[in-house]
Length: 227
Image (cartoon, rainbow, N blue to C red):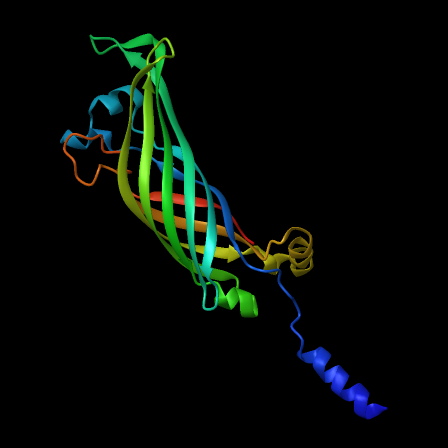
């Protein structure tokens, strides 16, 4: 009898603790700091955008979904991303004084991104950190409203961005809940991520386009769900 029991126990001991659901991609929800570099043509940096909207930085909301191309030694993913940014202030009169009505700039980016995430250690040994890098082709769709709420200007500006960041594996905080989440909804891993992005959104150097690049670098954070 023991000659059958012992091999069976050995097989159970060698079995993986967690059997993940099949991997297909990831979904990301987050935000990053943002201020468009529209006034870059003015040496002082105080062009019309600064006079209307001020010099503070805003927030651009982000949403991304990607398909896994490779998952053997980290994850290589191809995906699409979008977001939302809006800045509102009092419109200026021809004299340069603030008027009694609002104007706004709205930006909706549409992007194609290639991301590599070094999550092999998280998959294999639950190491809680996974660095990643991303290269993105960007198209910023934008419009400006006038005081009556109508569209005064609209357009789209193309460019690129590169991102580097690190994800913190939330699974290590509650492994049992992580296993239940995978079993019930197919989420292999959950990450809290922090990243830095450098963008160039100026129609690849065109002198006639608005420069919607961030005037500095964007700092971002959010949640990443790997399915």
